[in-house]
Image (cartoon, rainbow, N blue to C red; front, side, top):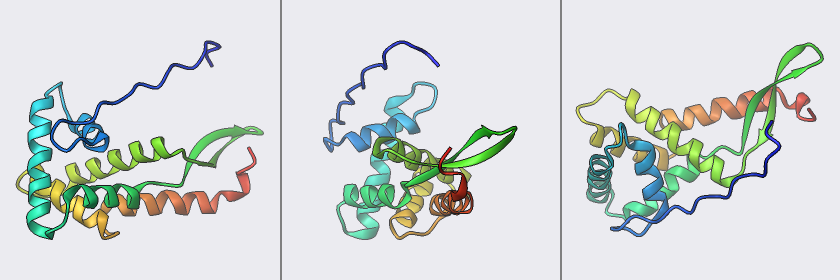
Length: 154
């Protein structure tokens, strides 16, 4: 491990249209090969589709989806007395949100569908209703942490 001091947290500026840091974070995770304008266009289109389908504020739906997928515990491999154990660890809020966004977008990319916009719309709606692949991933991690809770002291 590095002995230098920990780096300062970077302040993420909110996006221009919705004035939300969460939207900017999701766009940064969605972006590939530096094409941020394309990522913004896709995500804003997703938000408009969510608004059409649910008649609710799309930011609230996105926030609810991220909070539903956000894990409270994760498992990490630790070497304990010669064998590798899966040790459950609690997760900070920021790390949990980053994991949730990553899992939701991975589930979007795995979905079978016509466009990424429709896949994102459906996955965010499913996650806000506590169903979908991202929720299943969270439940698998929680189940592994529950099974290995005996090693929590390491």
